[in-house]
Length: 177
Image (cartoon, rainbow, N blue to C red):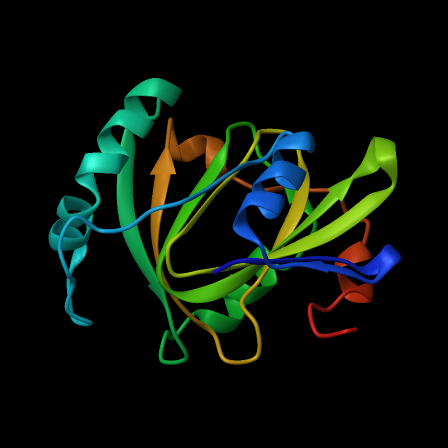
């Protein structure tokens, strides 16, 4: 279950309906999904995508997304530090960044520049989040990185990060209040 935090106001929201309402007001899509069948911890990409196909297929068709895959972030990845540095810098994309958390968790930070608003959503198993193209954000894997995630794309090339070089991410931590 997701948690939303707004550091400037020391606000924490845990009710899914209120999180969805807040994120929708910021132009960010949020939903919660359940698998059509139970998944074993060792489930691989085909089995995972199949378990969520009843939700994934109509969502992708409605939004015009073309492809989906599964990635797993964990401490044993040889390039984990490189991935952390890539994700943990404020950036934008030319297409939506859509992620569904099958297992584990991760922290999406958002910077809504015109409102001078910064907030974080801790996404966990069952949470779907879609960051619209052009929204400033960064991703923090947390202290104990582990997440099994379905990534959804229109065009994987659109997911290339365009860094803002603001260094804003260095001032924020989900655990800072």
